[in-house]
Amino acid sequence: MVGVNEMGEHAITRDTLLNLMEERRKIESSILSFNEILQQNGVGLEGPLVDAEGYPRNDIDVYQVRVARNKIICLKNDLKALMKTIEDNLYTLHKQEGTQELPQVNVDSSPMNPILKVGSVSFGLPADIAGLKTGDLIVQIGTINCNNFSSLADVARVVQHSVNGSVDFKVQRQGRGVVSLQVHPRPWSGQGNLGCVLLPMESIER
Image 1 (cartoon, rainbow, N blue to C red):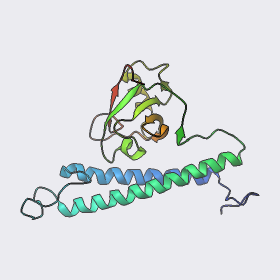
Image 2 (cartoon, rainbow, N blue to C red):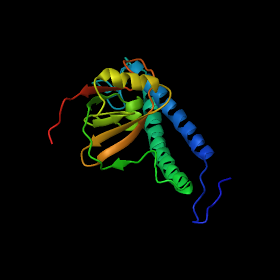
Image 3 (cartoon, rainbow, N blue to C red):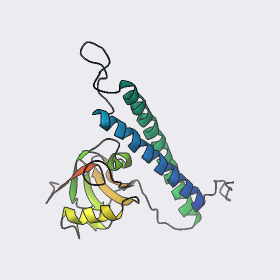
Image 4 (spheres, helix red, strand yellow):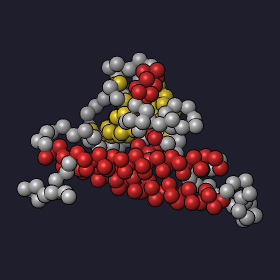
């Protein structure tokens, strides 16, 4: 049972967060499974399921695709709400423990130099689930930033070591400053473990 502290707030335990993290993992796994159904049918979340004459397409399993699309939309909404709950609980827990350090701050205005640009993001894969968007400028992946970045091989090693775990990303996003995201790398049918294309950049116009 969740207690209440002297401020009238629900007391949060680390077990509470662990349970929420496990729930997040299950939702992410389900999204990936339904996304594989779409990939097997050669379609995405959008696109026609009927031919030019208005008949159901015979090159795909229309029913299966419809179910998968609906499930993905619902699961992504559930995941978004769950992530907000996790962030709120993290804040409460750290306040309870009397520390100013917050492990996943949504927006940080600190100026940092980008090292990579997100060229594209594949729907339903780890980068997409975490909230990475095409055009994001990456300023940090794990411990890699402009002070120690040398090549994409460095990033690949960090990501590989984080498979089935998590790695923190900091990205510059237009109009939002620096956004912190947590990506959970996992193997999939394509290249890499993120499901996105990262483009190196030597400099950026300011």
